[in-house]
Image (tube, rainbow, N blue to C red; front, side):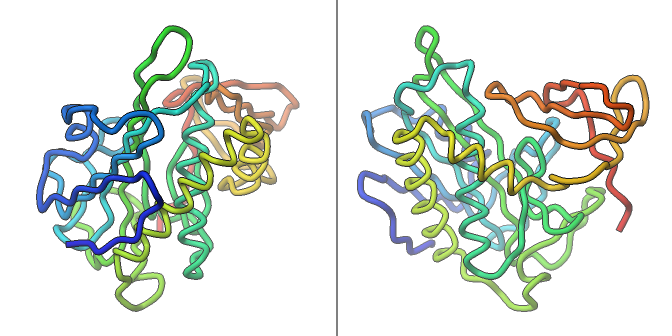
Length: 254
């Protein structure tokens, strides 16, 4: 059981096991209402997803697996990526507070150096041209010491810090930071959030190797559009724009 300190208007349910927190939230009744956040944490997921539809490996009771359902106010569907930025920055802020120099790899993986510490997924339901409901799903490697899947570069907090990390305080800090990011988003429309997200990007500066359907190339990150497209400028000075899954970072083997 996780003992959490949460912001006002947050509901919390902890599950020993579920298929995935995102599926649980999608199926749960929507009784929270506007301004309420429904947080679901789990010790184990039988169908947790990583990016590109991959299974997310997580040993039972050792990691932070959670989802949040809420109703963002006034966010057009065309600007949905700002909510990914908010979730990413909330996780980074909680990690920075315990001395982990984490960054976000576009669009929403959490990296320390060239190793993957966690990942996020977001789903949105629309009402007209605006987002009605958002569900986020986050997996963060906390106290897992061995990874048995063929994922090339996983790492956990206990491996980085050489000690176990209490999950409850980390979850509480992440929730508080997320509530703060949503408040800031409402105040200025996400301008400061986007600036901080860009500053926190993995491989933010310099030329780095990428691959797309045409092959390998080197490029620098120029921007991320409000709809989530990655804007690169390659070594020949050409602009390249990619949706998620259309381009990959080339990461050295550990």
